[in-house]
Amino acid sequence: MKPTVEISEAIERELLSWPDVTVGQHRFGGREFRIGKREIGHLHGSSVADLPFPRAMRDELVSSGKVSPHHDRPDSGWVSFYLHGEEDVPFALALFRRNYERIHAVVHRPRAATSLSLKEPQRPSQTEYENKH
Image (cartoon, rainbow, N blue to C red; front, top):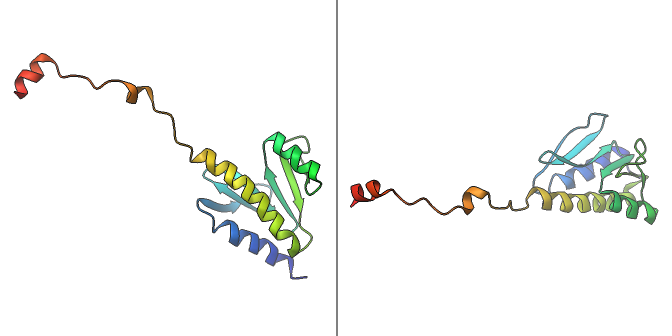
């Protein structure tokens, strides 16, 4: 097995190749990956990946047996995936990709037209019209 530092580096390198992903220090230690202000997940070294999902997705993932409820907040939408070796990297990346696509779609969703843009353009007053012609 390769040194564990290479596992987290491989995951980080891949995540940073995705558009709009940034990395920083997580407030409880480790490396945190974001799209804008939204976290897609974080790594605690090369031993665990923690990712936030909507509760229904979290329940589906936990039911699969491949992830566990979050190690510190088991009743939340968060999951923990324990990395035992480099053979776990593809599944960790698949979890990050699932969250990335979900969050990226929300962050880059076209905004609805505002009420201002729906108003008809104002017509010039009679005086403005006469002054131009």
